[in-house]
Length: 448
Image (cartoon, rainbow, N blue to C red):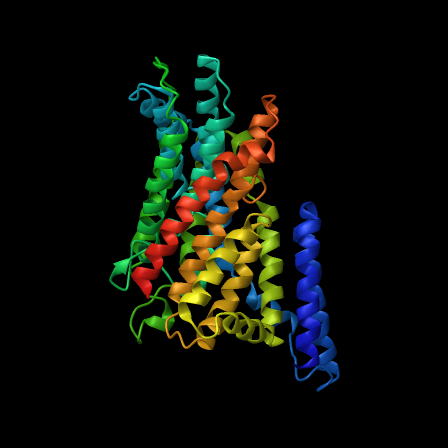
Protein backbone atom coordinates (compact mmCIF):
# COMPACT_ATOMS: atom_id res chain seq x y z
CA UNK A 1 0.00 0.00 0.00
CA UNK A 2 1.33 3.42 -0.99
CA UNK A 3 1.79 5.97 1.85
CA UNK A 4 -0.78 8.28 0.26
CA UNK A 5 -3.31 5.43 0.14
CA UNK A 6 -2.91 4.87 3.87
CA UNK A 7 -3.10 8.61 4.63
CA UNK A 8 -6.21 9.02 2.46
CA UNK A 9 -7.84 5.95 4.02
CA UNK A 10 -7.26 7.30 7.54
CA UNK A 11 -8.53 10.76 6.55
CA UNK A 12 -11.57 9.20 4.93
CA UNK A 13 -12.33 7.08 8.03
CA UNK A 14 -11.92 10.06 10.37
CA UNK A 15 -14.24 12.09 8.12
CA UNK A 16 -16.93 9.44 8.38
CA UNK A 17 -16.61 9.04 12.14
CA UNK A 18 -16.89 12.79 12.64
CA UNK A 19 -19.92 13.00 10.33
CA UNK A 20 -21.67 10.29 12.35
CA UNK A 21 -20.78 11.88 15.68
CA UNK A 22 -21.46 15.50 14.74
CA UNK A 23 -24.48 15.38 12.46
CA UNK A 24 -25.34 19.07 12.74
CA UNK A 25 -22.03 20.12 11.16
CA UNK A 26 -21.57 17.31 8.63
CA UNK A 27 -21.36 19.62 5.59
CA UNK A 28 -18.50 21.54 7.20
CA UNK A 29 -16.72 18.31 8.09
CA UNK A 30 -17.02 17.14 4.47
CA UNK A 31 -15.80 20.50 3.16
CA UNK A 32 -12.91 20.51 5.65
CA UNK A 33 -11.90 17.02 4.58
CA UNK A 34 -12.11 18.10 0.93
CA UNK A 35 -9.77 20.99 1.69
CA UNK A 36 -7.27 18.61 3.32
CA UNK A 37 -7.24 16.43 0.19
CA UNK A 38 -6.52 19.53 -1.89
CA UNK A 39 -3.69 20.44 0.52
CA UNK A 40 -2.25 16.93 0.13
CA UNK A 41 -2.40 17.44 -3.63
CA UNK A 42 -0.54 20.73 -3.25
CA UNK A 43 2.19 19.02 -1.19
CA UNK A 44 2.64 16.49 -3.96
CA UNK A 45 2.62 19.25 -6.58
CA UNK A 46 5.43 21.21 -4.92
CA UNK A 47 7.34 18.06 -3.89
CA UNK A 48 6.98 15.58 -6.77
CA UNK A 49 7.18 11.99 -5.60
CA UNK A 50 6.70 12.89 -1.93
CA UNK A 51 3.32 11.14 -1.76
CA UNK A 52 3.72 8.42 -4.34
CA UNK A 53 2.77 10.52 -7.35
CA UNK A 54 -0.55 11.69 -5.88
CA UNK A 55 -1.91 14.85 -7.54
CA UNK A 56 -5.10 16.74 -6.77
CA UNK A 57 -5.31 20.39 -7.79
CA UNK A 58 -8.16 22.76 -6.83
CA UNK A 59 -9.33 22.68 -10.46
CA UNK A 60 -9.45 18.88 -10.43
CA UNK A 61 -11.37 19.02 -7.15
CA UNK A 62 -13.99 21.39 -8.62
CA UNK A 63 -14.39 19.07 -11.59
CA UNK A 64 -15.32 16.26 -9.21
CA UNK A 65 -18.46 18.12 -8.09
CA UNK A 66 -21.44 16.86 -10.07
CA UNK A 67 -23.26 20.10 -10.82
CA UNK A 68 -26.02 18.20 -12.60
CA UNK A 69 -26.92 16.48 -9.32
CA UNK A 70 -26.68 19.75 -7.36
CA UNK A 71 -28.96 21.56 -9.82
CA UNK A 72 -31.50 18.71 -9.83
CA UNK A 73 -31.76 18.75 -6.05
CA UNK A 74 -32.08 22.54 -5.82
CA UNK A 75 -34.57 22.89 -8.67
CA UNK A 76 -36.80 20.00 -7.62
CA UNK A 77 -36.96 21.11 -3.98
CA UNK A 78 -37.92 24.64 -5.03
CA UNK A 79 -40.72 23.43 -7.31
CA UNK A 80 -41.99 21.04 -4.64
CA UNK A 81 -42.31 23.95 -2.21
CA UNK A 82 -44.55 25.79 -4.69
CA UNK A 83 -46.51 22.55 -5.16
CA UNK A 84 -47.02 22.22 -1.39
CA UNK A 85 -48.08 25.86 -1.09
CA UNK A 86 -50.78 25.32 -3.72
CA UNK A 87 -52.43 22.73 -1.41
CA UNK A 88 -52.86 20.29 -4.27
CA UNK A 89 -51.31 17.39 -2.29
CA UNK A 90 -53.87 17.91 0.48
CA UNK A 91 -56.73 17.90 -2.04
CA UNK A 92 -55.45 14.66 -3.54
CA UNK A 93 -55.23 13.13 -0.07
CA UNK A 94 -58.74 14.30 0.82
CA UNK A 95 -60.11 12.66 -2.30
CA UNK A 96 -58.40 9.36 -1.48
CA UNK A 97 -59.62 9.33 2.10
CA UNK A 98 -63.19 10.07 1.03
CA UNK A 99 -63.21 6.83 -0.93
CA UNK A 100 -62.26 4.46 1.92
CA UNK A 101 -64.37 3.33 4.84
CA UNK A 102 -62.23 2.26 7.83
CA UNK A 103 -59.18 3.35 9.83
CA UNK A 104 -56.93 0.54 8.64
CA UNK A 105 -57.66 1.28 5.00
CA UNK A 106 -57.03 5.00 5.50
CA UNK A 107 -53.57 4.21 6.89
CA UNK A 108 -52.82 1.79 4.05
CA UNK A 109 -54.08 4.21 1.38
CA UNK A 110 -52.21 7.18 2.85
CA UNK A 111 -49.03 5.10 3.07
CA UNK A 112 -49.35 3.93 -0.54
CA UNK A 113 -50.23 7.43 -1.69
CA UNK A 114 -47.22 8.85 0.16
CA UNK A 115 -45.11 6.26 -1.62
CA UNK A 116 -46.45 7.19 -5.05
CA UNK A 117 -45.85 10.90 -4.43
CA UNK A 118 -42.39 10.17 -3.04
CA UNK A 119 -41.42 8.42 -6.28
CA UNK A 120 -41.43 11.86 -7.91
CA UNK A 121 -41.04 14.25 -4.97
CA UNK A 122 -38.42 14.52 -2.20
CA UNK A 123 -39.15 12.13 0.69
CA UNK A 124 -39.16 14.80 3.39
CA UNK A 125 -41.43 17.03 1.31
CA UNK A 126 -43.79 14.07 0.86
CA UNK A 127 -44.04 13.52 4.61
CA UNK A 128 -44.70 17.22 5.13
CA UNK A 129 -47.49 17.06 2.53
CA UNK A 130 -49.27 13.91 3.72
CA UNK A 131 -48.74 13.97 7.49
CA UNK A 132 -51.07 16.97 8.13
CA UNK A 133 -53.92 15.03 6.53
CA UNK A 134 -53.24 12.05 8.79
CA UNK A 135 -53.12 14.35 11.82
CA UNK A 136 -56.48 15.93 10.97
CA UNK A 137 -58.01 12.52 10.39
CA UNK A 138 -56.71 11.13 13.71
CA UNK A 139 -57.84 14.21 15.66
CA UNK A 140 -61.32 13.84 14.24
CA UNK A 141 -61.50 10.22 15.42
CA UNK A 142 -59.64 11.02 18.67
CA UNK A 143 -56.94 8.38 18.10
CA UNK A 144 -53.15 8.57 18.27
CA UNK A 145 -51.51 9.60 14.98
CA UNK A 146 -48.15 7.98 15.86
CA UNK A 147 -48.64 4.71 13.97
CA UNK A 148 -50.15 6.37 10.90
CA UNK A 149 -47.37 8.94 10.50
CA UNK A 150 -44.65 6.34 11.05
CA UNK A 151 -46.17 4.27 8.22
CA UNK A 152 -46.33 7.35 5.98
CA UNK A 153 -42.68 8.15 6.68
CA UNK A 154 -41.31 4.66 6.02
CA UNK A 155 -43.42 4.32 2.90
CA UNK A 156 -42.10 7.64 1.60
CA UNK A 157 -38.54 6.52 2.20
CA UNK A 158 -39.14 3.22 0.40
CA UNK A 159 -40.51 4.69 -2.81
CA UNK A 160 -37.79 7.32 -3.15
CA UNK A 161 -35.71 4.70 -4.96
CA UNK A 162 -38.38 4.07 -7.59
CA UNK A 163 -37.47 6.86 -10.03
CA UNK A 164 -34.53 9.08 -10.91
CA UNK A 165 -36.06 12.13 -9.20
CA UNK A 166 -37.49 10.37 -6.14
CA UNK A 167 -34.49 10.68 -3.85
CA UNK A 168 -30.95 12.02 -3.75
CA UNK A 169 -29.61 8.46 -3.66
CA UNK A 170 -31.40 7.69 -6.95
CA UNK A 171 -29.88 10.77 -8.55
CA UNK A 172 -26.43 9.67 -7.38
CA UNK A 173 -26.97 6.15 -8.73
CA UNK A 174 -28.15 7.48 -12.09
CA UNK A 175 -24.94 9.45 -12.46
CA UNK A 176 -22.67 6.57 -11.41
CA UNK A 177 -24.40 3.93 -13.55
CA UNK A 178 -25.17 6.27 -16.48
CA UNK A 179 -28.94 5.82 -16.13
CA UNK A 180 -31.75 7.98 -17.45
CA UNK A 181 -35.29 8.46 -16.18
CA UNK A 182 -36.64 5.66 -18.37
CA UNK A 183 -33.97 3.20 -17.18
CA UNK A 184 -35.64 3.08 -13.79
CA UNK A 185 -38.61 1.46 -15.56
CA UNK A 186 -36.89 -0.65 -18.23
CA UNK A 187 -33.11 -1.10 -18.27
CA UNK A 188 -31.52 -3.13 -21.07
CA UNK A 189 -34.84 -4.85 -21.70
CA UNK A 190 -35.22 -5.89 -18.06
CA UNK A 191 -37.57 -4.59 -15.34
CA UNK A 192 -36.00 -1.52 -13.76
CA UNK A 193 -35.76 -0.41 -10.15
CA UNK A 194 -39.29 1.02 -10.25
CA UNK A 195 -40.87 -2.43 -10.44
CA UNK A 196 -38.58 -3.83 -7.76
CA UNK A 197 -39.57 -1.02 -5.41
CA UNK A 198 -43.26 -1.41 -6.23
CA UNK A 199 -43.11 -5.13 -5.46
CA UNK A 200 -41.56 -4.26 -2.11
CA UNK A 201 -44.25 -1.64 -1.56
CA UNK A 202 -47.05 -4.17 -2.16
CA UNK A 203 -45.53 -6.65 0.30
CA UNK A 204 -44.97 -3.86 2.83
CA UNK A 205 -48.56 -2.68 2.43
CA UNK A 206 -49.71 -6.18 3.37
CA UNK A 207 -47.56 -5.90 6.49
CA UNK A 208 -49.21 -2.58 7.38
CA UNK A 209 -52.66 -4.04 6.73
CA UNK A 210 -51.87 -6.95 9.05
CA UNK A 211 -50.60 -4.66 11.81
CA UNK A 212 -53.77 -2.53 11.60
CA UNK A 213 -56.13 -5.50 11.14
CA UNK A 214 -58.10 -4.66 14.30
CA UNK A 215 -58.63 -0.99 13.36
CA UNK A 216 -62.03 -1.38 11.70
CA UNK A 217 -63.64 1.82 12.96
CA UNK A 218 -65.88 3.53 10.40
CA UNK A 219 -65.08 7.06 9.20
CA UNK A 220 -66.97 9.92 7.66
CA UNK A 221 -64.60 12.35 5.91
CA UNK A 222 -66.30 14.92 3.71
CA UNK A 223 -64.08 18.02 3.94
CA UNK A 224 -62.25 18.99 0.78
CA UNK A 225 -59.26 21.32 0.47
CA UNK A 226 -59.68 24.12 -2.05
CA UNK A 227 -56.92 24.59 -4.61
CA UNK A 228 -56.97 28.02 -6.22
CA UNK A 229 -53.70 27.80 -8.15
CA UNK A 230 -53.02 24.84 -10.47
CA UNK A 231 -49.83 26.28 -11.97
CA UNK A 232 -47.38 24.66 -9.48
CA UNK A 233 -48.96 21.30 -10.31
CA UNK A 234 -48.33 21.91 -14.01
CA UNK A 235 -44.73 22.85 -13.18
CA UNK A 236 -44.12 19.57 -11.38
CA UNK A 237 -45.80 17.58 -14.15
CA UNK A 238 -43.72 19.51 -16.70
CA UNK A 239 -40.52 18.73 -14.81
CA UNK A 240 -41.22 15.00 -14.74
CA UNK A 241 -42.41 14.96 -18.38
CA UNK A 242 -39.30 16.82 -19.56
CA UNK A 243 -37.03 14.47 -17.62
CA UNK A 244 -38.76 11.50 -19.23
CA UNK A 245 -38.48 13.03 -22.72
CA UNK A 246 -34.80 13.90 -22.43
CA UNK A 247 -34.01 10.47 -21.03
CA UNK A 248 -34.31 9.06 -24.54
CA UNK A 249 -31.44 11.28 -25.76
CA UNK A 250 -28.00 9.77 -25.03
CA UNK A 251 -25.11 11.51 -23.34
CA UNK A 252 -22.03 12.29 -25.44
CA UNK A 253 -20.13 9.16 -24.41
CA UNK A 254 -22.98 6.94 -25.64
CA UNK A 255 -23.98 8.93 -28.73
CA UNK A 256 -21.51 7.29 -31.15
CA UNK A 257 -20.93 10.59 -32.91
CA UNK A 258 -24.63 11.45 -33.23
CA UNK A 259 -26.87 13.92 -31.43
CA UNK A 260 -26.42 14.01 -27.68
CA UNK A 261 -27.65 15.97 -24.66
CA UNK A 262 -25.50 18.20 -22.42
CA UNK A 263 -24.13 16.71 -19.21
CA UNK A 264 -26.19 19.24 -17.23
CA UNK A 265 -29.47 18.56 -19.04
CA UNK A 266 -31.43 17.12 -16.09
CA UNK A 267 -30.23 19.86 -13.77
CA UNK A 268 -31.12 22.54 -16.31
CA UNK A 269 -34.65 21.12 -16.65
CA UNK A 270 -35.27 21.10 -12.89
CA UNK A 271 -33.90 24.60 -12.40
CA UNK A 272 -35.78 25.95 -15.44
CA UNK A 273 -39.23 24.92 -14.21
CA UNK A 274 -38.45 26.22 -10.73
CA UNK A 275 -37.39 29.59 -12.15
CA UNK A 276 -40.56 29.76 -14.25
CA UNK A 277 -42.57 29.35 -11.06
CA UNK A 278 -40.50 31.95 -9.21
CA UNK A 279 -40.78 34.53 -12.01
CA UNK A 280 -44.54 34.01 -12.12
CA UNK A 281 -44.82 34.50 -8.35
CA UNK A 282 -42.87 37.75 -8.56
CA UNK A 283 -44.22 39.35 -11.74
CA UNK A 284 -47.79 38.12 -11.90
CA UNK A 285 -48.82 37.22 -8.35
CA UNK A 286 -46.58 39.82 -6.66
CA UNK A 287 -45.90 37.26 -3.94
CA UNK A 288 -42.40 37.85 -2.57
CA UNK A 289 -43.07 35.84 0.59
CA UNK A 290 -43.54 32.57 -1.29
CA UNK A 291 -40.43 33.24 -3.38
CA UNK A 292 -38.36 33.76 -0.24
CA UNK A 293 -39.89 30.60 1.24
CA UNK A 294 -39.04 28.58 -1.87
CA UNK A 295 -35.37 29.54 -1.74
CA UNK A 296 -35.28 28.84 2.00
CA UNK A 297 -36.79 25.40 1.40
CA UNK A 298 -33.88 24.32 -0.79
CA UNK A 299 -31.76 21.91 1.25
CA UNK A 300 -28.44 23.77 1.27
CA UNK A 301 -27.27 21.43 4.03
CA UNK A 302 -27.44 18.43 1.68
CA UNK A 303 -26.00 20.40 -1.24
CA UNK A 304 -22.93 21.46 0.76
CA UNK A 305 -22.55 17.95 2.13
CA UNK A 306 -22.63 16.44 -1.36
CA UNK A 307 -20.25 19.03 -2.78
CA UNK A 308 -17.72 18.22 -0.08
CA UNK A 309 -18.19 14.48 -0.50
CA UNK A 310 -17.73 14.67 -4.27
CA UNK A 311 -14.34 16.31 -3.72
CA UNK A 312 -13.39 13.84 -0.96
CA UNK A 313 -14.35 10.83 -3.07
CA UNK A 314 -12.36 12.25 -5.97
CA UNK A 315 -9.33 12.51 -3.71
CA UNK A 316 -9.90 9.00 -2.39
CA UNK A 317 -9.99 7.68 -5.95
CA UNK A 318 -6.77 9.45 -6.91
CA UNK A 319 -5.05 8.04 -3.82
CA UNK A 320 -5.92 4.44 -4.72
CA UNK A 321 -8.27 3.89 -1.78
CA UNK A 322 -11.21 2.85 -3.98
CA UNK A 323 -9.26 0.03 -5.59
CA UNK A 324 -7.92 -1.08 -2.20
CA UNK A 325 -11.35 -1.22 -0.52
CA UNK A 326 -12.92 -2.81 -3.58
CA UNK A 327 -10.40 -5.65 -3.45
CA UNK A 328 -11.04 -6.20 0.27
CA UNK A 329 -14.83 -6.32 -0.11
CA UNK A 330 -14.52 -8.66 -3.08
CA UNK A 331 -12.26 -10.89 -0.99
CA UNK A 332 -14.96 -11.20 1.70
CA UNK A 333 -17.07 -13.15 -0.78
CA UNK A 334 -14.19 -15.36 -1.93
CA UNK A 335 -14.93 -14.45 -5.51
CA UNK A 336 -18.61 -15.46 -5.29
CA UNK A 337 -20.93 -12.97 -6.98
CA UNK A 338 -23.86 -14.08 -4.84
CA UNK A 339 -21.87 -13.76 -1.59
CA UNK A 340 -20.56 -10.29 -2.46
CA UNK A 341 -24.01 -9.16 -3.58
CA UNK A 342 -25.56 -10.46 -0.35
CA UNK A 343 -22.88 -8.81 1.80
CA UNK A 344 -23.28 -5.48 -0.02
CA UNK A 345 -27.09 -5.41 0.33
CA UNK A 346 -27.32 -6.37 3.99
CA UNK A 347 -24.31 -4.39 5.19
CA UNK A 348 -25.93 -1.40 3.47
CA UNK A 349 -29.17 -2.11 5.34
CA UNK A 350 -27.37 -2.27 8.67
CA UNK A 351 -25.19 0.81 8.17
CA UNK A 352 -27.90 3.03 6.72
CA UNK A 353 -30.05 2.25 9.76
CA UNK A 354 -27.68 4.41 11.79
CA UNK A 355 -25.98 6.78 9.35
CA UNK A 356 -27.39 9.01 6.63
CA UNK A 357 -27.68 7.06 3.39
CA UNK A 358 -26.57 9.99 1.20
CA UNK A 359 -22.88 10.06 2.18
CA UNK A 360 -22.83 6.27 2.47
CA UNK A 361 -24.33 5.77 -1.00
CA UNK A 362 -22.10 8.44 -2.55
CA UNK A 363 -19.05 6.66 -1.17
CA UNK A 364 -20.06 3.09 -2.01
CA UNK A 365 -21.04 3.99 -5.58
CA UNK A 366 -17.40 4.85 -6.17
CA UNK A 367 -16.39 1.40 -4.90
CA UNK A 368 -18.86 -0.72 -6.88
CA UNK A 369 -16.89 -0.86 -10.17
CA UNK A 370 -13.78 -2.02 -8.29
CA UNK A 371 -15.77 -4.61 -6.35
CA UNK A 372 -17.37 -5.88 -9.57
CA UNK A 373 -13.98 -6.12 -11.27
CA UNK A 374 -12.59 -8.02 -8.29
CA UNK A 375 -15.17 -10.81 -8.68
CA UNK A 376 -15.14 -10.85 -12.47
CA UNK A 377 -18.58 -9.27 -12.84
CA UNK A 378 -18.62 -7.51 -16.21
CA UNK A 379 -21.79 -5.49 -15.66
CA UNK A 380 -21.89 -3.95 -12.15
CA UNK A 381 -25.61 -3.09 -12.27
CA UNK A 382 -26.52 -5.97 -9.95
CA UNK A 383 -24.31 -4.39 -7.30
CA UNK A 384 -25.45 -0.85 -8.12
CA UNK A 385 -29.11 -1.74 -7.69
CA UNK A 386 -28.38 -3.93 -4.65
CA UNK A 387 -26.61 -1.00 -3.02
CA UNK A 388 -29.57 1.32 -3.70
CA UNK A 389 -32.00 -1.27 -2.35
CA UNK A 390 -30.09 -1.82 0.89
CA UNK A 391 -29.01 1.76 1.51
CA UNK A 392 -32.40 3.34 0.81
CA UNK A 393 -34.69 0.82 2.49
CA UNK A 394 -32.36 0.13 5.41
CA UNK A 395 -32.97 3.63 6.69
CA UNK A 396 -36.41 2.49 7.81
CA UNK A 397 -35.02 0.22 10.54
CA UNK A 398 -34.53 3.09 13.00
CA UNK A 399 -36.01 6.56 13.56
CA UNK A 400 -32.68 8.23 12.69
CA UNK A 401 -31.88 6.21 9.58
CA UNK A 402 -33.65 8.47 7.07
CA UNK A 403 -34.55 12.15 6.83
CA UNK A 404 -38.20 11.25 6.16
CA UNK A 405 -38.38 9.38 9.47
CA UNK A 406 -36.80 12.29 11.34
CA UNK A 407 -39.31 14.67 9.73
CA UNK A 408 -42.25 12.47 10.71
CA UNK A 409 -41.09 12.15 14.31
CA UNK A 410 -40.52 15.92 14.42
CA UNK A 411 -44.14 16.50 13.38
CA UNK A 412 -45.35 14.15 16.11
CA UNK A 413 -43.14 15.84 18.70
CA UNK A 414 -44.73 19.20 17.88
CA UNK A 415 -48.12 17.57 18.50
CA UNK A 416 -46.98 16.35 21.92
CA UNK A 417 -46.14 12.74 21.03
CA UNK A 418 -42.70 11.48 22.10
CA UNK A 419 -41.85 8.54 19.84
CA UNK A 420 -39.42 6.05 21.35
CA UNK A 421 -37.07 3.97 19.21
CA UNK A 422 -38.90 0.78 20.17
CA UNK A 423 -42.24 2.19 19.05
CA UNK A 424 -40.83 3.20 15.69
CA UNK A 425 -39.05 -0.12 15.15
CA UNK A 426 -42.27 -2.02 15.84
CA UNK A 427 -43.33 -0.80 12.41
CA UNK A 428 -39.97 -0.07 10.79
CA UNK A 429 -38.34 -3.49 11.25
CA UNK A 430 -41.04 -5.71 9.66
CA UNK A 431 -41.62 -3.10 6.95
CA UNK A 432 -37.90 -2.96 6.11
CA UNK A 433 -37.32 -6.72 6.19
CA UNK A 434 -40.30 -7.31 3.91
CA UNK A 435 -39.29 -4.63 1.39
CA UNK A 436 -35.56 -5.41 1.35
CA UNK A 437 -36.01 -9.16 1.09
CA UNK A 438 -38.42 -8.73 -1.82
CA UNK A 439 -36.03 -6.35 -3.62
CA UNK A 440 -32.97 -8.47 -2.81
CA UNK A 441 -34.49 -11.59 -4.38
CA UNK A 442 -35.98 -9.82 -7.39
CA UNK A 443 -32.75 -8.01 -8.26
CA UNK A 444 -30.77 -11.25 -8.10
CA UNK A 445 -33.12 -13.06 -10.50
CA UNK A 446 -33.36 -10.06 -12.85
CA UNK A 447 -29.70 -9.13 -13.07
CA UNK A 448 -27.74 -12.29 -12.40
